[in-house]
Length: 233
Image (spheres, rainbow, N blue to C red):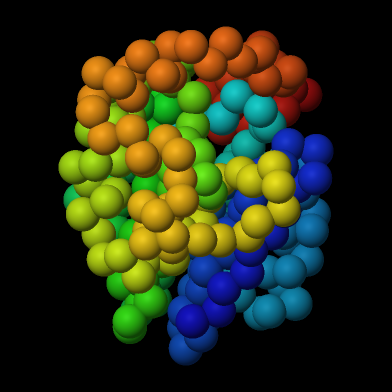
């Protein structure tokens, strides 16, 4: 497998490129529009064929590159909540499997941060990989106070879905603000203060007291991302 973790310094967003080494087929997760030229350069240098671009959810802090990558590579685009986001080629479905060459990426619906949040699970020998978007962060979780977020649903997604996976699963979040690149489920269970709150009502109460400012690009990013980041003109 070919794997690259890319980073956008403006929004602290991680983008992930995965490819089957034999077929050269590739998928990109959470691409950022301002980084699309760098993404395309890397794909070209590695002689990959991008067949899919996917977002874990409709982002509020950056504009997605789904439309730009589709226009440049003819890849298929994927996102949840097809009722609101009709620009994608395919809607994500819980428990579906995305095939990238011989790689099999399992789709897991994990609402809570938003109502269209998904994670992607790759069984990889003894070190499976989980791409968590904003559902589970390193030593934290996503917020739940906009885009139909729901703290109770986030608690359920974490404890009934994410934490049932093998503890050695490597965790690759959608963002990190401390410069940490990855974690494991075992490490997060031991050290993540949000996961230490094991009563659902206590978790809901805690999330309601965060009082966080809105992302600075929210009013621009959310409408743009509901059109897959399509630019006017």
